[in-house]
Each structure stands twice: as structure tokens, then as C-alpha cells.
Length: 133
Image (cartoon, rainbow, N blue to C red; front, side, top):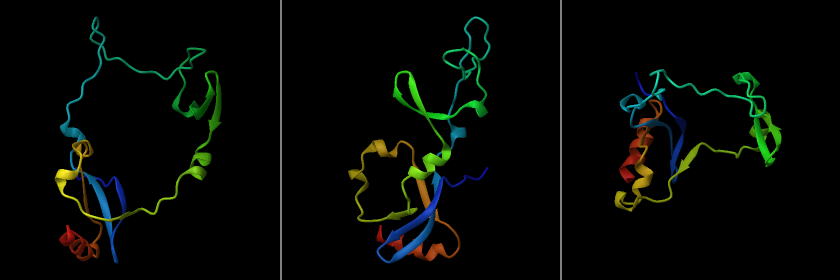
């Protein structure tokens, strides 16, 4: 299966702007994952979403986001309210300078990604920016 872009936007170096797409450099299918099992029965363990007071299971459509004012007081926050306070994004990566790879802390390389031109017309602009690297 072909990888799907995690993000699409623009790469800008001075006056050159190029549409790009960001892809994961590794696949989740390559990772080994384990299930949790009941040691006595060998059955898989399920995680249920339950009401902390009643102990009853709550379906996904019955769950909303909330902000804790204190231990027992919550304010419900709607999706629309979150969108209204979201920071504006230009979807553009501005290149200010280039650094040697040795200057990059390895912690930033734990989940690698690659950037590629997005669309046929982007290849020339991407090549100009890549030559600067």
C-alpha cells in the first residue's frame, strides 16, 4: 500500500515556493505490536470507556471534551469552540538556514519523515531548493 501524506503545504526558500507533501519514512506495519492477555484465561484484555461515578460503559457518541477547573468541576468544550481558538497556520515551512546533520539532536530523528514535491509543476522548484542543501 502506498504511503499517504501526513501533511501538505509549501516549502519556501527566499523567493522560491514549492508545494510539498510530508510522508512517514517508516511504516507502522514494520513494527511489532503485542496484545495484552489475561494470564489465567489467555483472552485479550479490552479497554472500556466507563463513567467514573456510575461505572456504566459510555458509547463514543456520548463522549465530549472537557476542561477541568478543579478535581470535580469540568467545563464542556465543543469542537466549534476549539476550532475558534485554533492558531492560524500558513501551511508553509520557511527555510531560514541550513545546518549540518551532526548539529541535529538525535531525539528529533526518532520518527523520520521525508518531504517530496507535490505535483508535476513542483519538481523544478523543489530541485532549486534541494540544490541549496
